Picture 1 (cartoon, helix red, strand yellow):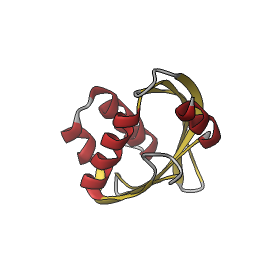
Picture 2 (cartoon, rainbow, N blue to C red; picture 1 turned 180 degrees about the horizontal axis):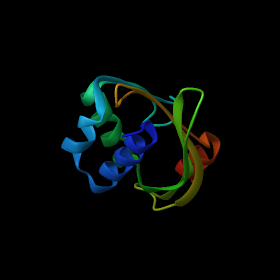
Picture 3 (cartoon, rainbow, N blue to C red; picture 1 turned 90 degrees about the horizontal axis):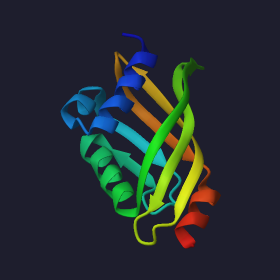
Picture 4 (cartoon, rainbow, N blue to C red; picture 1 turned 90 degrees about the vertical axis):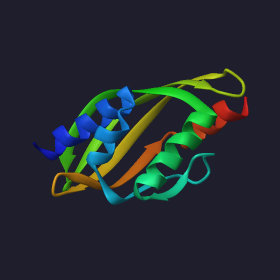
Length: 127
């Protein structure tokens, strides 16, 4: 399976909330980062860290990622799309551009950086 295929499956398992299958594609020491200005942002390590990120995210927003493209470049896999949803506390809706950069080794993700239009998301969170 190619690295692009692995990343596609990661998103499929996240959507299905199939955590056993998801964690099989994440290295036990995976490192995930996101802008720490976001309520769910920061640095998360390992399967527990990935789960903590998911819980923090779900506590703040309900969202769905729409994938426009997944491709390999510079030795990593990039997912480009949008995250659409609403703020849990207020119901304010958002439609935000996002790019995720995945680093894979031996068929599993060892790192990811989740970049979004942070200013746009912060504005939605503050409304």
